[in-house]
Image (cartoon, rainbow, N blue to C red; front, side):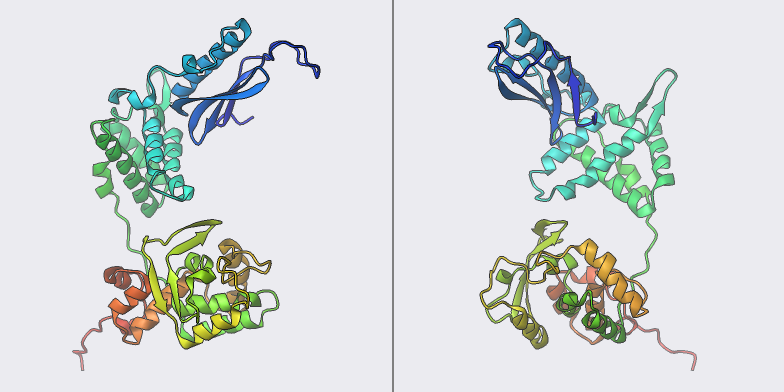
Length: 404
């Protein structure tokens, strides 16, 4: 049994049979976690009961939960069980814990809990869980005991401890990933200060310390490559049903998740405009990456394409682009099977499907389109547009020729 999700406390008392004996069933009380919070699960008077403890699942709090579990067992056996469950609630919860007694793990879990009220997708919070994993995997070695940084009080992180941890991560992670981890840790501690749980943020100096080397911009697909990719999908016996999806990606420059999440309700009656304000990835629907919506006027070609796809009795909630089985497109399957296969057959250097967005922006700028207009169509600010997407040579400033 997985210890991180369930710990069984106590032993089965009395032998259970299939017959009703008229006596209360006496059994084990289990300590469980529900979304990171501890609770007790047990049976009393033939009914399943659960008691939330109001404690985050940490090693210290789990010890307390196990003590309460044994107390419940003894009370059931002795006939002193408190049906209101108040007897088994902690007198002081983690929320009331003094600043000096909250561990790093508890602080991060509290931060995640608060963030969950503002973030609709659980996947957005998974990145913070990795911080606990890193803190647990790194141990501080003392004279008598070895313990992880996750167990250390958040208000008691020494500079030499942080330096050791920083060097540990430096050996394991790429600079850009290391930068992200340190920024997230700093955000957790800063939140702790605002909540008056801790007093100092020791991570701030390390945020500026991590230097991320510049990364070469991805190459946009050329006009010939675009044509070859579209033609490749059109003629492929297995993946031709992706053809309209591919043309829409190249033609609009929208993000892959935005195209996958597009429903018929997001198009106007004649398919001349499309509203983009949602994204679908890993079966999770959420707002766009920038949390901003935009309406795009489509080209005649894309309008005709969508009109030809639209069912006569159209269900407005259905996705516009579907898998072979009529479901929403799975971006992993599309990339790993269809996209890679078509690019390989066309002998085109591999670039991610997201590069269709980079391609449209680069070609639009290359043809002299106003950068502000391009930014409005793609949902960027102008500076981000130039820094990350203007990949074509013609749209860059040219050096003067002085050696004639």
